[in-house]
Amino acid sequence: MLLSRSYQSILPSMQYYSLHNPQLKVDFREATILGQAPDKGLFFPELIPTYSAAEWEELLHLPAEQMAFRIMQPYVGESIPASALQQIIAETLSFPFPLVPVTSSLYGLELFHGPTLAFKDVGARFMSRCLGYFFQSYPKKVTVLVATSGDTGGAVASGFLGVAGVEVVILYPRGKVSPVQELQLTTCGQNITALAVEGSFDDCQFMVKEAFMDADLQKHRQLTSANSINVARWLPQQLYYILACQQWPKQLPLPVVSVPSGNFGNLCAGLVAWKSGLPVHHFIAACNANDSVAAYLQGAAFSPKKAIPTISNAMDVGNPSNFIRILELFQQDTDRIRSLVSGYTISDAETKATIERIYRDYQYVLDPHGAVAMLALEKYLADHISEAGFFLATAHPVKFPETVETAIRKQLEMPEAAKDLIGKTSHSIFMAPDFAQLKVWLLNR
Image (cartoon, rainbow, N blue to C red; front, top):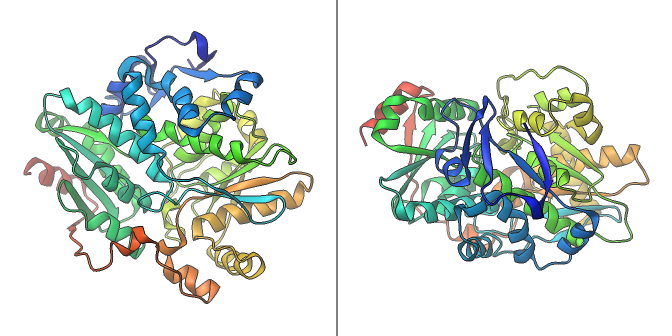
């Protein structure tokens, strides 16, 4: 079903099909509002725009907002006019994305300079503004229902705070997110409600998926998703891979990219950019103990498992939703996937040791997720000494003070975005990992 086509010849209305039923198709507007197809399938673009080497040379020299418009416009099609899309992109990319050298052949792409100090600000800001545009003419109030393992919830809350006609309900695993992450989820007020679930992220994600499929809830309210299953959250993540390549030193070989991976939307977005022709040599899926995909990439059959709590908590996903999109992107060709993507499993002990060593040797401070990605990249480069690469630093270290400060033996300086949280009152509603309880709560709101 998946096709590729030069961007000049793409039809103005991009279609998205359900991975459970390729005949079920909608445009970008409906895919964004629905979040998930009625048959429980994830939406996938019918066409992947492709660009020639000359076109990529031009794209890599464009200002960020112009490049991003060129990349995203084919996916949006006629659902949003050009002027509105340009404004959405300007607000999405309103903070820096520096590519910082750690060693002569290893760089970190810092994605934590946005309002909630995490890479998910990009997808959440793009999606919230798309939905805000669509809801201007929508006949009923919409509830954004989202599960988070750490950073998604804060980014979504920030992106949707105060948006008229939109209620946001965030489910997070109680006791399994960092203090700063929890404050970002639970101190917004207004149209944001946080539910503290006595379970894992997988429990939260299961409850959200069941809600989308429940006929009673669908009659009662319009539900949509803000997780990376939503195309408007997932697809704009390819932009910062391109921003990194714009900054990549010309004297180095094409980069190897190491991605800290949990629900696999981030890596999948990078692979979409590669499919479009982005000059990247290889990818690494850097996993913690939740390594069902890493094991698959190393030769095992894919086997989801129960999530295991780790210090890189945003990656604690035992059954990643977006893995099916990676399979679709490569038309189920396991050999092609394994030739392009390597999988590594990094333990908590290795993660802590990496944070300590990199700060000692290079005075660079890693968060636990970036540490997983950096160590995986180091291991890969040790076996490929002529290559170079960058890892995605997906969250600010201050979001994980206990782990990071213990490792570097130094107190972290609080950035302004986090200082604003200090002293705020936290509000959340405790809930069992039980869809029936969530359904009653939503019906009675």
